[in-house]
Length: 74
View 1 (cartoon, one colour):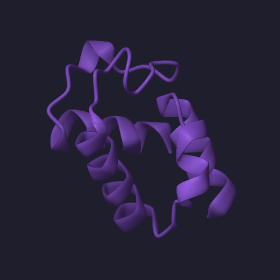
View 2 (cartoon, helix red, strand yellow; view 1 turned 180 degrees about the horizontal axis):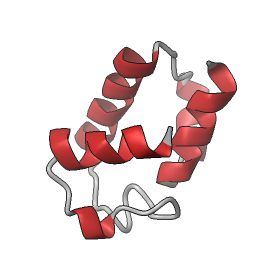
View 3 (tube, rainbow, N blue to C red; view 1 turned 90 degrees about the vertical axis):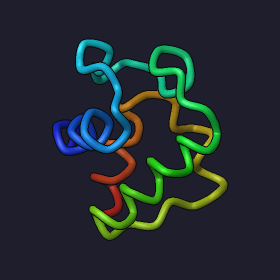
View 4 (cartoon, rainbow, N blue to C red; view 1 turned 30 degrees about the vertical axis):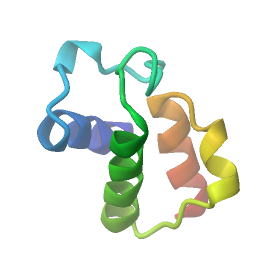
């Protein structure tokens, strides 16, 4: 799961591959703004067929958090 999200971040969001690691924070380390976070969530929903609940979004701080969230709902 992490590897697929990593590919999305590199290929779709044009992030530097060297910045992407499981514990990288989405807004701090990767510098994603709210629009980019929304884009990431939509891409993940489409790619993995899961729905992210609005109430859960604040708890998704790192790339691994997103991967774990998807794993739990597949």
